[in-house]
Image (cartoon, rainbow, N blue to C red):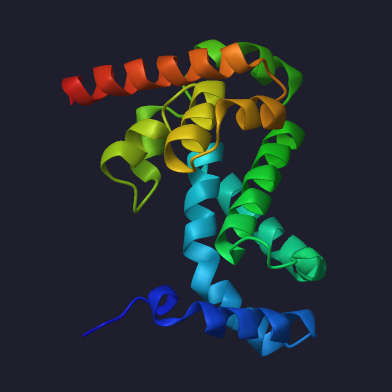
Length: 183
């Protein structure tokens, strides 16, 4: 029987691994990377809706992780902290790599066209629809529905009003429902 590597690790094992990484153990870091890379990549892909950008952002997450590992204090679960780091880096990455015109126009455009979605191997069902959402609606939907952030947290992260976060979430749900029913 195959066991997912992430689930094979106990919390105690992961804490020991984290301490080894903090002391500079590169093999422990490689193990930590292997345990979490797919989850980090999936979140980046959902937020950025672009395979290449998601790969770049994932790499940036793990570079930052190596440099900032000592700031993880253990008050929360490592995966919670890692997802917060990943969300922040993906959002920053999006801000850095979008030109001004795309930012202005993207509200009315979908994140990806259908051919680009089809090119994203490994995506199925809801994920294929999520990456088609307009950028802000997609980010709010992923952060709220998938990652469990509150609208107040999302508003702070994305620099928008709480009401805008709620509105974008509602818009995303409506579009997903419409697309799902038409598939």
